[in-house]
Image (cartoon, rainbow, N blue to C red; front, side, top):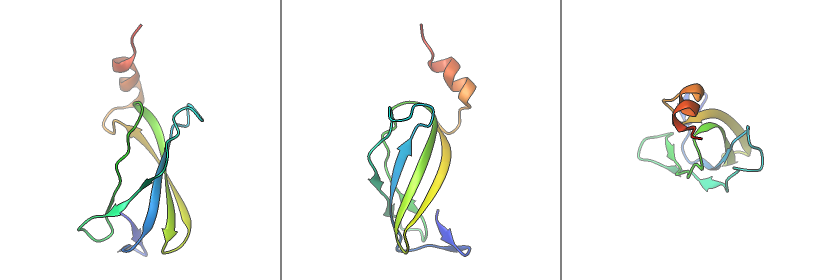
Length: 91
């Protein structure tokens, strides 16, 4: 959900890049175009995340003005980093 001055931002044009800071240059992805939904200020983009863990999403705006918004996140969103490493780690 994107807002400007506490109001839903409509008509924005931006792409979403996903980067994994713990593995620079290894899991960077091509930008994906975000598309507006039926709800004002809400946009949708589909990302194909290569692996679980801490990621940074970069929203690269072209309209209404050029801007960059950086959003740290974790995939899957409901798992902590330590839980994720324990359940996914295999020898």
